[in-house]
Length: 147
Image (tube, rainbow, N blue to C red; front, side):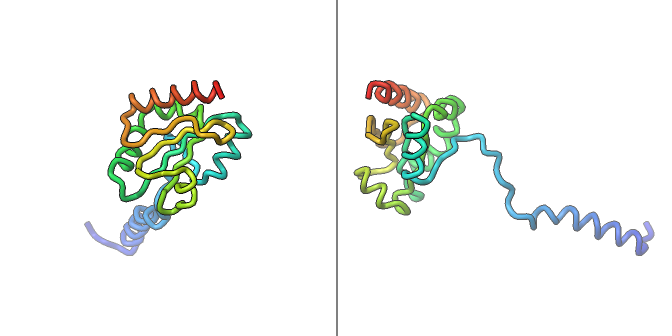
């Protein structure tokens, strides 16, 4: 194949078009998981406005069971669907010490369910698989209706 200026120009253009997307930065992931809030203040406001209970997961970046729940339990389709009945909030205990202390968090992961008025109705510590977590969510819903 004889390389001409035209061929070089075409190859350069193709190369640039192939490389350009990598300079655009990371793609925004298709968020089909739980739409976590990151602020308890926001969660309480939204819960009061919508009349929904709060699902608060207190976690830490360094916590293996926390990471496992984020990677498995919270990716489960049934858990994601049921979470729509709650206002979900993910609280990093190292970044939001004030919220963690106010909730009396002593270990992670700890999941605390609050009613729509912000009153605690159920608490559980440790890793939960999807099946166990769905049962917790059902129990929290019952308690939220009774209070």
